[in-house]
Length: 139
Image (cartoon, rainbow, N blue to C red; front, side, top):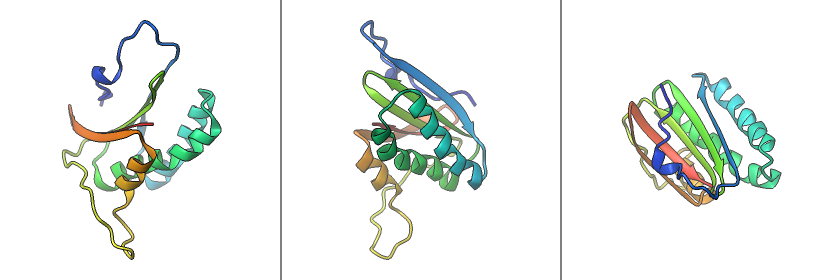
């Protein structure tokens, strides 16, 4: 499956000073989903992003991938775009079922993922993709 990164999220500006992009498949096992967390953290540090920024956002990014694993359909693709506007993360999967916000109770073990992502991101949302859905967050 090709990336569902939409051209509207990658503005073509002549004054751009930085631009990094990585798109890769997330293997469909829980162990691989957990390994993705380390892979993304290493990639962001390679892009010379402040380690404090990476530490504060990596849990939200991991949650996005975990949600695709738990609620989506394979294959899952993770795309990261770093430019002058910040970090855009998109997770695409083949499920057409859109995320649902929940109001978890104190004792609920699930239902906090979107809240966690929203708290860490400047903006987030989802849209129908070519072959499923894309959940995105701008940090």
